[in-house]
Image (tube, rainbow, N blue to C red; front, side):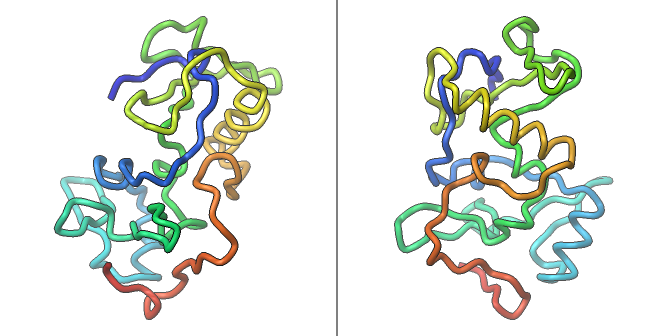
Length: 175
């Protein structure tokens, strides 16, 4: 992971490649773990030393990752994703952590945040920041990070309306 300041990014859009769901370990908060295991059973998570993680299929991908008829990879937890999943590839911080604080600073309603993007994500378009990134994408990520927004519009794959989201334990099956 190489994090770069948001100001080097023109735009970000999830392209449904599924790389984030195959390449990273997702640490769950206790409440996220509790919510997921209540709905889908304990078998979709795993415990580590003082941490809970999202479960993985034998191929290393997240147990909730599935391919939609469109050929895009989607999350079966779409509306109930863990915070780490909702925020990737962005890091929203109160203090600069990955360098270049001037380029990472983002003012939002009188508060300064330091916003970085994981350059590993193929949904990044490099260049001068677009109005969509500044006024829609980054504010949504900040609101999600602060817990004042749950619904994702710009910070996730835009799903066609005919995609079925798995909602209950009995609807869920490993793919």
